[in-house]
Length: 173
Image 1 (cartoon, rainbow, N blue to C red):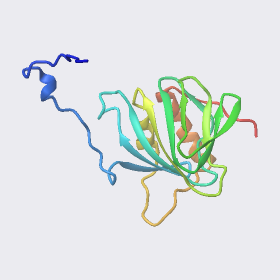
Image 2: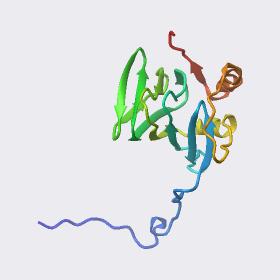
Image 3: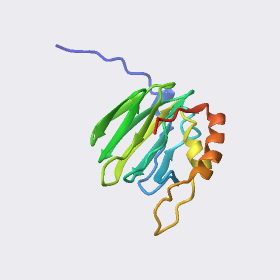
């Protein structure tokens, strides 16, 4: 059986159009936040608004408070370790190799309830919220661990959520 696949003429700009973005393993914008370490690998500005992409290390006890995004979906992929995820009013554990998709408007958070650092990558679609990490996070200091922020810091951070249409939806303690 023979198939004929149509091929565009060599004058078609798809033959030579360039637009790939290469981010080397050592590149990105590193930030500390809530005790975690985040490296922003791609921003909405680099992807024409399509997505924002972040690499994260979450130490034991780390992770953000429960919240919901108004403008973007969030997808997490666990590279190593395990994290407990809040999904509305239930929790589940994601482990190495698991993927978690959280649609915009859904209450969620992740928390490292284990005894070793978890590593993951996650993305926002469309992009934009990754800028929050750049502007609100702390610049890492070599040889130090990310500090766990106290209540005084959270107040300033939460006030910035309005700009990004993120709503805090805390858990009962």
